[in-house]
Image (cartoon, rainbow, N blue to C red):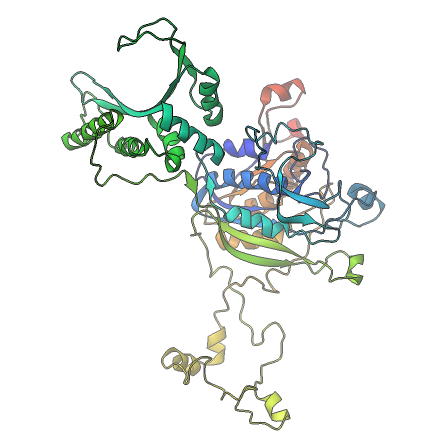
Amino acid sequence: MSVRILVGDVRDRLRDLDADSIDCVVTSPPYWGLRDYGVDGQLGMELTLGEHIETLVDVFREIRRVIKPTAAVWLNYGDCYATSPNGRSAADTKAAGNDDRTFRDKPFSTIGPIYDPHHRSRGERGNNLDARPQKEAPTGRVVAGGYLKPKDLCLIPFRLVEKLQEPYHIGPITHEVDRAWLAGLIDGDGTIGIRREDNGKWNPGFIPYLSLTTSDTQLAQRCVEITGLGKVNPKGFAGDTDVRGIKQRRDNFVWRLDGQIASRVIRDIYPYLVQKRSQALVAHAMNLSQGAPRPTKSRPVAADIVAYRQRLYEAIKSLNHRGDVLLPNLPHVEPNIEPGWWVRSRCIWGKPNGMPDSSGRYRPSVAHEEIFLLSKSGDIWYDSEAVKSPPSNQSHGAPAPNPGAKQAALGRDPTRSTLGVRRGKQRGHTRRHAGFNDRWDAVPKAEQQENGRLLRTYEPEVWHIATAAFGDAHFATFPPALVERCLIASCPPGGAVLDPFGGSGTTGMVADGMGFDAVLIELSEAYAEIARKRIADVFRPVWIERKDPEQLALLGVAHRMTPGAANA
């Protein structure tokens, strides 16, 4: 088994991982506005809650790519209250005593509006959040009801998972207004067609394309900007004569996309097309037919496939010449949409050793955090037998139920409930169900309990886990017992585990000890080294892999640090 620590921005390092390569994710992202770890590009320091959630959503879209269809993702996130800094940093508070309570000293105020960072004002082009200086005021729109007042519970875990559940666009054109704009432009001045390429003795090739010819270079360049695809090329100059014998009055330019790239853009703009909707349908059908074997000298394509493609080619050619074409049974154009995450469960992590909270004089003190179980397909690998609760005669020490005691004490019929219904009858029914109930009642109680109980979202014996102290500078340490419970439940034998926010390496340490491969991603060099030492001291040497070896070589840091003195 091996543990890899990838140093760098989490989104960049996730792109370095292979698709469908991870079996289980256990992670706890940096909480919003909690602490400044002093690292450029760190998460949790976004000026508004809306930007923080959108950043995490982007990270989880990259996680979605690298996990297997049946992978489980365990997400831990604790809530907080909107407040202002109290003038003393968390580091100073910890140095002054043993107080490392969550959300005590914020690096900035979390009071104020919740912005939608994707909203663009009229005339604004593109989402320029990344280009905006960190200290500049946000420019997005305030979401409905989105204002955090002093002492407001922020409900961040629930806002986050709700956003993760939403379907999202994965096509090349990010903004809907741009997709509608390009569709209108193509409807008026563009072309959706199919180019035929004859290959001598082979079968011909048919390639869908999308093009725009215009004398306005800014218009063509705008197409490049919103799609990020293609380039603008000159097509003709003023005074030239075209194939129809007409002399051109202006310089003309063309923006053109071919093949799969063109098909992706066509899928993006299809819902907004009017005049070229039929052409888009035919081009999409042609693109789907390309999944069949490609023509080669030694392997020609089947004659019926060639004939089908030829009919599509002739159909779109006729449509572009304003002919009437019957288009029966063409496949529907599916939008470039991912369905979002499935939230399969919500568990309560109770902290029996939660730090004292002076706010408990005015409201219940916070002594729990949320753990969500996510899936990208709705199905997960889950070993229910491995996480069954042990059998017990009583339920967590509670007294045995005596449903007739209260009625008898009141001088009423103990065989009836407080509503006068005779006991033994199931709610909503006039008689007990025959079959299973009778068979179950006939089983001795000891036998009923001997197999234990399936894991529930709150189990005092399971999710009641104390926080674990770790003295090497990391403020928020995952309890190893919590990680172990998640991996027992949902990581298959020999599986690979990912923690995209590696921190002090708890997930990697537990995964290695249980016989799993692990990948940790950490932005901070200091914390990556803490995690390496922590895991190496318990199990085995760990590799630290860095994103930019040339830049780090200038700093005198090895790209791939070998175990031992080289990275001590």
